[in-house]
Figure 1 (cartoon, rainbow, N blue to C red):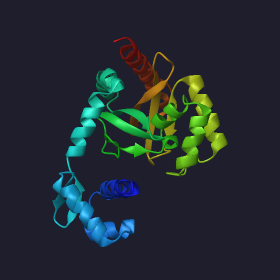
Figure 2 (cartoon, rainbow, N blue to C red):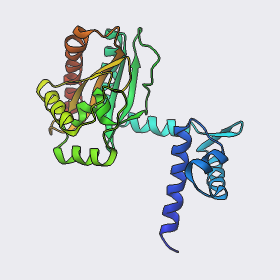
Figure 3 (tube, helix red, strand yellow):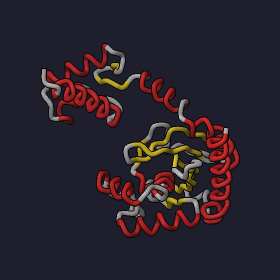
Figure 4 (cartoon, rainbow, N blue to C red):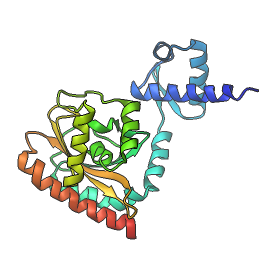
Length: 252
């Protein structure tokens, strides 16, 4: 039997899962149109994923099941940086009243693996598992700044410099200057670059071998995060927390 067949079959299954997740649910006909695959093929994969427990059905649409939440939570809890950062995330959210998050890089994108909400936090598109282009927000830029130049170039070649708002950096030279500034100041800023009306600040977390492991960030609306908080108060809080996480991660 050709090895291409099971590999392609697995690729189709994961494409279905990702499409369903991206659309927050989809039926077989919708999946068929979105993926440009034969309806019978899509149906067979959906039924198999459903029977295995990876999909659930609500009405005429399929959704990914809580098995992915369980597996993601196991992975997160076994991640060294999460274990070291969880208390600091709670502290940051409590002190600022805003969203605090822990982000890591996976496959050239920024992935939020933990969040905490302060008492003033507003409902925004920030949650565990969200995947972002790294250049569009402070957490991703804080990580990019400490990757080697070849890795940064590879990420841009693969994912591009997509524009999320009119403030998003979409020029390589401008991004290079921004990353240099981040290395000089040890924190990153996002001034409505990913979400209009929102600011974020992030500090890197670096291990004892000088490898970037992730970033801590604070998010909030521009009307509450004024320039003093944006450029002085919150960066200081994040760098303090980043130092604590680095110590716990490196020497615990």
